[in-house]
Length: 196
Image (cartoon, rainbow, N blue to C red; front, side):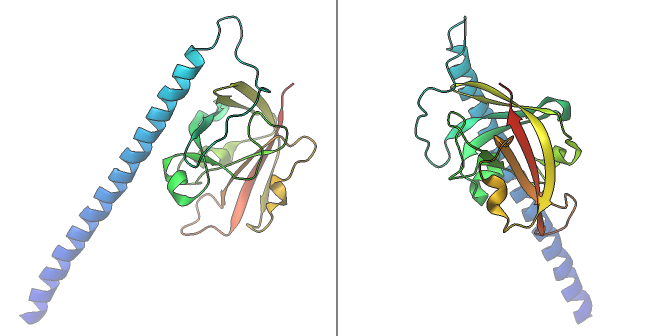
């Protein structure tokens, strides 16, 4: 009889724990969806204000970005991937969308722009990316277009993938393997070159 009493309480505790986990998950999803929506509206208002004859020059001076600011919208049309990019790549930012990796180039600068996102959310479609796929980055200063040159799998310590190099103007970073349970041991890297 005492065993049945404790089993009943254990069952109730497991049900309550599961309900709390689900509520937490849906709360985080709502927060991320809201952040994506607000950032999308903001960038669309900026784009709507561009002169009708031409967008602003992408090489004009870059405004300084603070942690959490909207950098732009990243799209990979063939993969139906579209995600808003925020400044920073800490866990809070990556729960809301993709993050611009600090100390890598900004869209208006020369160099290699680094953007990261989680493999189990926004960058999940990258598992199907291939050379010559196009990537667009819409920013308040105009839209930049890139073509994928190659992909690679590296150790997390190999930060040289973010360095400036020929044919490397944009680098996307996510964890690998895509279906790994827990903290994935490697990184999946996509390199792309700016279309002139």
